Length: 237
Image 1 (spheres, rainbow, N blue to C red):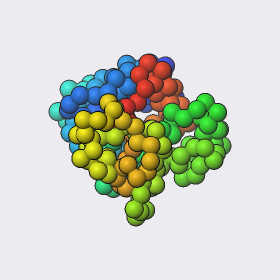
Image 2 (image 1 turned 30 degrees about the vertical axis):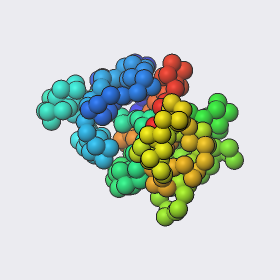
Image 3 (image 1 turned 90 degrees about the vertical axis):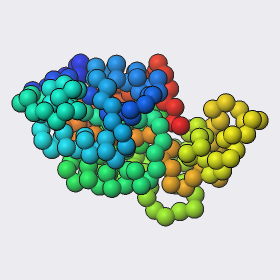
Image 4 (image 1 turned 180 degrees about the horizontal axis):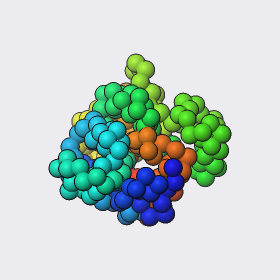
């Protein structure tokens, strides 16, 4: 499988592509990412629903030639590819089942922070993927890098917490009442694991179908995300 320099994966005749997003507002980072990928925006409600849309498109061979026909379920015999990448938080129950479904068909769901760490870690990550043929590896690339996948173990604290990374919101804050406190600074960062709910996904997410889960595909996505982050940092809110 080869990846084009503009959008989509071209060896199977794919044209264009879409990034699944919420129906509402999107962050400046996601907006920049759409531009960097050369994709169109595909609006849809629900994190789990978006991942099932991605999976359906991957299983059916990407048989949608533009965003309108994708949304209307029309098969025109042509192809396009969709991704689901976001920097805003959801909860463990939004991703656990969808992650299993994606992996069972050769896709994957990982943390956005996995791609946006420092350049040294990124090099180590890419080398590991090439050596393993793009297979999913649930391990730390070095002692400073968070795990690639979300942790679903029962816990009283958030096992994926990174100090200073996530913005506190009424959805992820352990004590939501503090978000309405007039003394709180704008866009407060979570500095302690005690600030956040145990089952909030604070590290963003990247969901791909099997057609993107290759060294070439992941590299293309990573490069686009780095360019987008150079313009607008992820919100992680």
